[in-house]
Amino acid sequence: MRRSPRVGVWLPPLAPSIFLLGLFVAGPILWCFYASFTNSALSGIAARRPKFVGLDNFTTAFTSPDVAASLWLTVVFVVLSAVVGQNSLGMLLAVFLQHRGKLLRGIVGTVVVAAWVLPEVVAAFAIYAFLNAQGTLNEVLGWFGLSQNWLYTAPMMAVVLANIWRGTAFSMLVYQAALSEVPSDLVEAAQVDGAGPVRRFWHVVLPVIRRTVVTNLMLITLQTLGVFGLIYVLTAGGPDNKTRTLPLLMYEQAFKFGQIGYGTAIALVLLVLGAVFSLVYIRSLKAEV
Figure 1 (cartoon, rainbow, N blue to C red):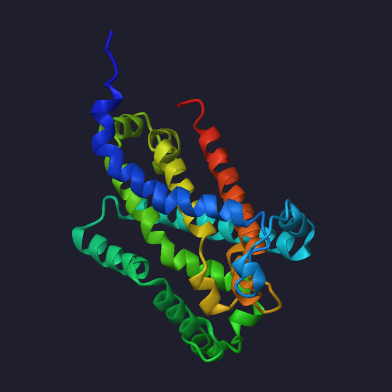
Figure 2 (cartoon, rainbow, N blue to C red):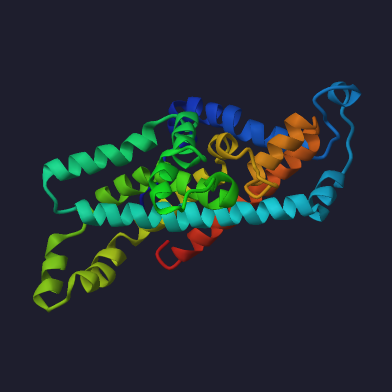
């Protein structure tokens, strides 16, 4: 029977990583958990000597129509831009480029990845220049009399498209790597049996890369839950709070109104939402884990 290595063998080389994870990951979460039960503020006596207020911040959050509205907008933003947009478009691009020439793969890959490597603020200004009232899109649509200020008439759709444009490259690269690992003999056998491209993808390729799909969905979902700068630069949560997701509401309460305790309570709501999404993805793999 194989014996597991002793703690004294594996702990010393892992100690620096465990220390850094505790300092930069667990530490802020624990402080956020503590602050959410206090009346901590940015200034005043509550900033110097915060008091324990029990569940008051959570009671306020769960009875606030602003939190409920932002929670719904966050779910809509994540599902449309990450689960549907980035994931589906990334898969389509990866499949489309799989057997294409090196030149085409290089051009398409460069264009898609360019949006991903841009800093978030730069990408936001670029999409702002495309969608605003005097932007490129309206210059084209103006020929057909369809120009309008998209950031005001369809703000959620604007931020969803912006996040799809910026984040699709990650899914495309993940799926390109996964598709390259699919055994070619399986695909060829299905082709010999008369399966068309759609049936080969659905019944042969997709089951093989199923774990990669779920992993990619989890990663882009958690990344999208924390998107702040892109939405803030494009709409600042407006107009009329129609794009104020939980990160923007948390920022507003904590840093504009100075209610650090209440802001951290909203942050924990966002953390729980991420945990719910993660559990859904993990349970979808339960049969294989």
